Each structure stands twice: as structure tokens, then as C-alpha cells.
Length: 338
Ligand code: PHE
Image (cartoon, rainbow, N blue to C red; front, side):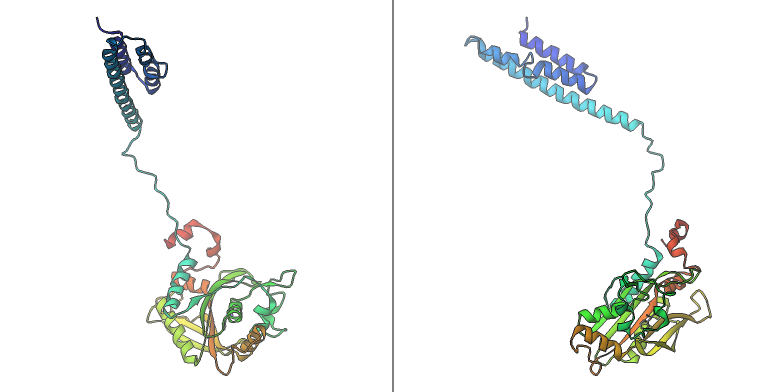
């Protein structure tokens, strides 16, 4: 007759093989090998055995523990594999997957990134300033007379505290010069606001790229070369560029730049693109008085500034007929620029 321990072991092994799921298997383990399990109990019973019996029973006990533990591990493995196979059996791997939709950059952002990379190659750094501005930064410091029409309440958004939404990014010229002495070579992209009637080419919020370059011996020739290079890089080498005399209070002389190219929407028409000019000495004087020094000595330093209409550039570059699409958040529009 086999030993009681051997009978226990065989019963345990039979139960393990019959266990149909993980819970049953765990219950079996506890019954035989748990702290008060029937196999484990033999460890206690060993103490009362005679010296002669102990080695043989000890050997049996070890053997029973090892074989049942191994059988349980093997069975658990098997049950897990079967469970996984059943789960996979319900998945049709021939079905097409769900495609994660990729977002794309807004056309204005794409246009801005192109512009920034061209100006970077010419050594321009990025600068910024707040959208909510003081009247001084927006007008006075830019040599704009108190009765200038741009200041009119009909044309500008004023806050109750007297501040306003900047009507152009030229405010960043002033903020940059207040902070740092020359030389300066920056571009400042950002929003500007005017009380315009909204239509295909006007919006109360639009975007500009301001530029400012102040150094020794900066001439109109440098201004012309810089902006011609920029516009040809953006629109193509065959682009025609025209400088037209204009008036801005903060530059003298001032120009507007028109662009014409067969490659562009608008074809053979001259399209107005940019205001620019040589920084007016009165602007340096305003900056000096705010700084309390003579860092921008108009006798020593000269510079140019420009303001590019970003929405305009993007419309022409991508052939977009209506400014309002930029803010409409319509995927049918946005998806065309992926
Ligand atoms: N700030 C001007 C505008 O918004 C553009 C400009 C910028 C002109 C810099 C000259 C120099 O119309």
C-alpha cells in the first residue's frame, strides 16, 4: 500500500489536471499546499515521527510538494494560454484598423514658419510684445500725432483703463529698443486689431510680421535688398517687386511694397504686401527719453522697419480667396493644407 502522502500527492495532481479555470486551480493549491493545506500539515506531523521514519517521510514530503507545485505552475500556464487564444478568436484581424487622424498646421502657422526661417538665415531673431498695449507704445513713441486718425475711437479698440488692442505690431519696435541697446535685428510676428468692417479682405483681428534692423550704416539699399530677398524666397525668383513712396509717421522715407508674379493668385495684378521705411529720428528720441540715455543716438545709428501683412501673404501663397476662412475652424478648409 502506498503511503498516505503519496495518496495525497496523487489526488492533488489529479485535481490540478482537472481544474478548468484559474479560481479552481487556486482553490486546489490552497487545499494541499496552503498554510493549513493537507500536504503542508505533514511538516507538523514529522515532529512526532520516530527517527527511523523521518528520512523517508521527509523525502516523500519534499517530493510531493515539488511535483504538485510544478504541476500547478504548468496548469496555470496552460489555462492562461487557452484564455488568450479564446480572446483572440473573437478578433477579426482581417478587418481594416481604425486610422488615427493626423492634425496639420494651420495655413497661417505654415506661412509664419516659412517666413521665420527665411529671416533667420539673414540673422533676424524673434521678439514679442503684448496685444494689450499702452497708447504710448502704439502711437506716441511711434511719432504719431494725438489727432492722427488711427487713434480714433471709431478705428481702435480702447479698454476702460485707457489701454488699447495694438493696431499694429510696430509696438514691438519700441519695446525691443527700450530693453536693449543697438545693434538690433528682430522680427516680431503677432496679432493686431482694428475696428474694421469684416469682409473677404478685412478682419478686426489680423496678423503682421514686424521687422526692425538698427545698426551703423543701415541704408535704404539694405532695406530693399532684405525685403526683396525675403519676397523672392517666399514667392519664387521671378517675382517682381515695386517700392512705392508712402507715408508713415514713424519712418522717413517710407514705402509700400507691391508684388507681382504669374505664379501667384491675382496673376498680373500688383498686390500690396508691406509697409516699410527708415526709422524716424523722432522714434529714437522717444526711446532714448524712456531709457534715460542716448543709446539710440540718431547721429550714430540708423535702421529700417517693416510690417508685413501675414494673412495677406498666406492668402497669396496658398491661393485663399477669403480671409474669414482662417478663423472659421472648418475642417474642409483646414484639411487642404496637410
Ligand atoms: N505699422 C504699419 C502698418 O501697420 C506698417 C509699417 C511697419 C510701416 C514698419 C513702416 C514700418 O501699416
